[in-house]
Length: 92
Image (cartoon, rainbow, N blue to C red; front, side, top):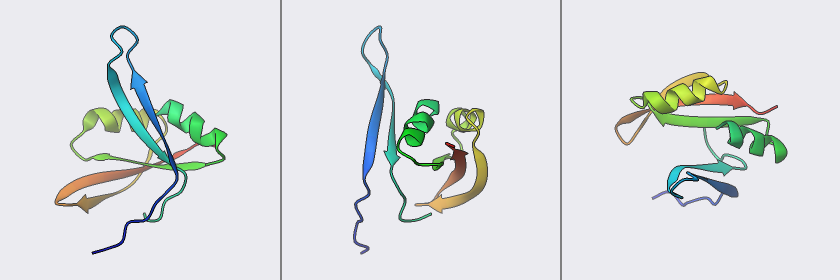
């Protein structure tokens, strides 16, 4: 079994004002040891110029958000039998 590697990160929650329900969550990793909009700004403030963003290949909603925020498709990879699309977003 591969040993886990700890990567520094910040976690951000999106909370709907009217009922205080969590409606989104994103984990911004400061660097990657392998191969939205607000998170791009957070990354830029931390000096991170490029973000890897992934989504399930069947998740059209997430894919649309990624594309609307400048996501550039890299490739689709297999993760535990499901396709995961990889996109890069520039935070520069």
